[in-house]
Amino acid sequence: MALLKIARMGHPVLTRVAEAIDDPTAERVRRLIGHMIETLLDAEGIGLAAPQVHQPLRLILFFDAEEREQAHDRPPIALINPVIEPLDQASEPGWEGCLSIPGLRGVVPRYPRIGYRGLSPDGRIIEREASGLHARVVQHEVDHLDGILYPMRMPDLRQLVFESELRHFVSRIEGAAPEEDTS
Ligand code: NI
Image (cartoon, rainbow, N blue to C red; front, side, top):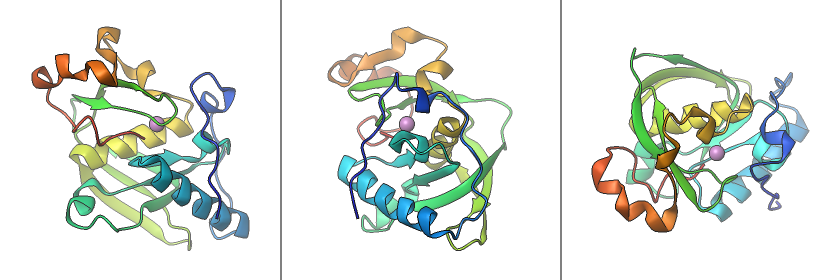
């Protein structure tokens, strides 16, 4: 296994549309997932998309936020060619961070409830509903596959702040625990 370099905002790989993976069971995909898991754990993030490690492919990793509350040693879920369906009309604001934008946090509107589907690394269909932080993380990661970084979703850039200044905001905005959601 190896730690991969994480692309930071400004690198073109983060703003292009990633390509679908033809064969989820291919050896190179399996290897990439292994390296991405190592990289995500090392960075202590909650999610990671392949473009963030310079691979323009439709592959994301994420921890199930609720599962993680109970068992910290659960491996992240790998989802290939993911598709999202909103299950709410309205979006809700919440704090997000991103491993490609270190040191910053921002308030981003997301659907509180979604359905998502995609393929597992052994080619099985994964289909689930998610809410709360889990839904937020999956939406954030799928955005990476379409070249979208969270500040591009922000209606109010006054809420794009350094982590050290979060204390001025946290009490006023509901949302994900700000120290937990870097992805
Ligand atoms: Ni991110």
